[in-house]
Length: 137
Image (cartoon, rainbow, N blue to C red; front, top):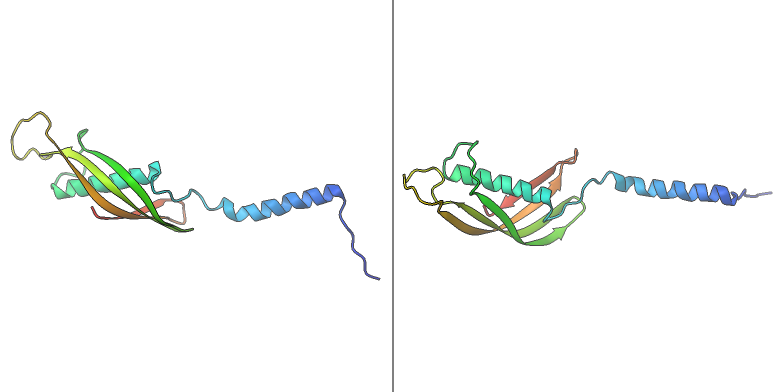
């Protein structure tokens, strides 16, 4: 004779909770999502742009200026996947006209502004750090 033992209502509730936890566990390890316009993404893009700016003007790595400003405009998410996201935007740069002071002119902080069309790819490392690859700088 075959028979099954059905759990009581209390046990069924416990089984349902256990099933939900098991289903949610794979999602717990996903970490932060990959958002094209998040603060973390913007910060990394601005750091890369500042590095490129310093290299273009042959400035020391520790050079900084309060007049060097960046803005990410018209952000578009082109592709969004589980492990990477591809984005496009305009990177607006406002920078001192003569950042190295090579011309010797003493002007009241002349600023040059320029927009760059960039694309960038976002991925996370196994330990959760964000990696950004930028094209167009």
